[in-house]
Length: 361
Length: 40
Image (cartoon, rainbow over all chains, first blue to last red; front, side, top):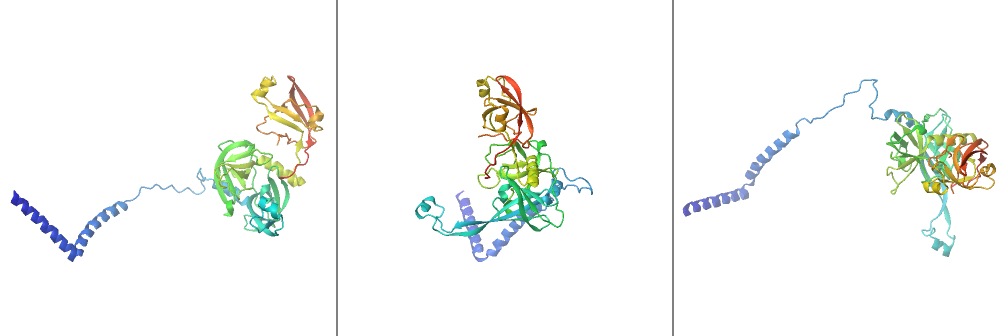
């Protein structure tokens, strides 16, 4: 037994020694052996790679057939040429001193540091609403601008003038002079919108160029946001970013249903909460501006308050219909008509009042 | 201050339906022109 073990040990030792000598003196012999093994494994892999992948190709649509259901290309094609880019510039006077805006610094040194004129540029979007060059946009896009340029879909830039603006609804109407009829957008019916309807936002976000984003109507009648005095926003998750302001929100048929106006954002970019002014409001404001150059609103001179169940109970009312008139301005039409604080306003001209969804503004 | 500002054109006559002391009554109001507001 011991002899056998010795023979085995000597054989293994001799083999290891031979391998060591070959590896040292003739390493290519070992490499060719390894290459053969590697080549085999590679061949195995490549044979697996070359196997035909199982892919499914969509059938080619027949000429003249309707576009795929999920594409909004036709709607975009209708609306896109009417959406313009607006570039504004304004002269501002700023001090070059880095602490010039520091109140403490100004308290000690006053306004002795000279100010120099600089030009500040702005960016926005707009919608051509008539072939003779009326463009609807946001007031904040053109607010304070000295020069306004509109880049239309014909790749031309036009000087624009402000026909009129309504800061309270954040709308403005511009006019450009073109030697040819401009493509116009068709107005949709924002009153018929439902939460969940598909909408597309068209504009010029960050100045990158004409951009279309899609989403749905997330909510309707959004108010109390502190953006405008009159708020009745369409909320959408279609991406709206700086530069989209004044651009179009269209429905799946390519009709204008809103003017993109604001976003809720902590980063400055889209977070999926955008707000558009409904076209019904935009249209009435635009018509007044085109006709009169400004917007004149009616006024009755009352303060109202939502009628909560607690208020209804304290006023011994059977239900919470209507709105509580909490104040009447002296000499106002309401005062002259005999309305008094504490009255419950139920309706106007036969229409029941819904304070949450303004039938007024 | 919450103001009600009518979408009606100034000068148009409207009927306001109100409830006072448990009774419903109708009052005619001629919509006025809103006093000027300072632009933001």
